[in-house]
Image (cartoon, rainbow, N blue to C red):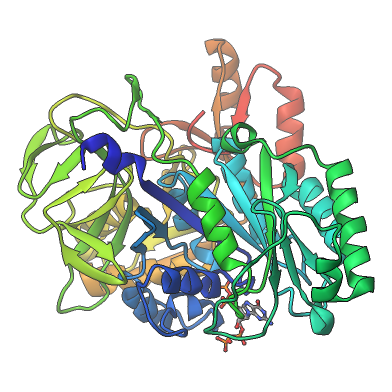
Length: 525
Ligand code: G4P
């Protein structure tokens, strides 16, 4: 296979859902199809969300296990599928945001009884920002849930994307009989079974008696009415619109019962994008360019004190990556060789000799990498699109062991490189402020500083609402703002100006009073 064919057949995506929507279950069923696992129940990576939030050591142990399942690669019908796992726990949402920068498309799982939930809404905002194509899978049709049309309306309204059902259910809950696959024009009858995969019945014309024979007259008529309505309300599915992130095809099914999953996967490989061009500061990088380029989107620390190295996950943006190849670490301006890159096939981490655009390779890391770092064959390229989002929780961090000041500095700096949290320094009192998306990160930081760097710290409460990156075309306006809000000004690690608003009201007032200032809620604008 030549380079172009190798890249063309790659499908790299993430599954996202609100905790308990069914992401783990769906992932597992997809792996079953790819032959990557053979029994249901083998994927447990996301069970961390079920542990009490205070017990983060337990969570970290399980996160350690989930390294192997961070990326799950498998072959299906001559496609190379890479599923990127996203942490189920919402305190690790920042990890998920970053993972979304390394995928070419996304499958969103929605619980049919709960509809669109908070976490899904947040993650969809990131997809929308990046115009990532999304497919929606409405799960748990074997349970009583909301009316399918209501769900479709809810998705359009809440996720702010047009939808187009490509399958439609026949009843739900106890009376669930199956789905009609609009995309393939066939009927799938439902039999609850966790391991068995039902065969579709060809049924191009739903107006024949054949349908009545399969599902009974009443349900057949209801399905005909529903499909008429679907065709009347929703315009025909258009792959280009999906690829532009304008319309989301929708499938119905039950992941637990392995129902509707094959239809989803078969449609997915046909319509989902192969690796797409990626924006860098200097130029757009096309995946089919021969020279290798890639960027680090995630760093996974090994919590085992005996094996403390990290793994840097690199998304290959173009060309072919080779083991022992000579690659340039752009930030360090240094050539490097990697003798044991790993890839992730069928839940196993193994050393690989080559990988292609769309793939993820894991590189052993002892503090050389930082989130967002670029590797190339020599060209100076900096990939964009790894924004930090405004944290939601803030604390002052204080040194409690003056003998270990250096260790503390180093520890904080490395943990920030890994993307555990964000660091700001107050302009007003010069104190360090740690910003996170969840309470857990503070515990993670304190624990790791002590165990990995021998440094001790304490957090002090700080009531802030948001950190906003500010800029203005007018230097004077910017200076005036900074002077007036001096008490609330801070710098991020890149030395950019950040306004730490202590309430939604204060932020709103500032936006009103200072029209020439632009307020950004992500670090990339
Ligand atoms: P998540 O990764 O999105 O958090 O969800 P996960 O797959 O862990 O699923 C959450 C719960 O929903 C699990 O039950 C799972 O078995 C159930 N589930 C997933 N898909 C379906 C479905 O199609 N129908 C029904 N009825 N249930 C479904 P649990 O009891 O919390 O966990 P477990 O003990 O079954 O592992």
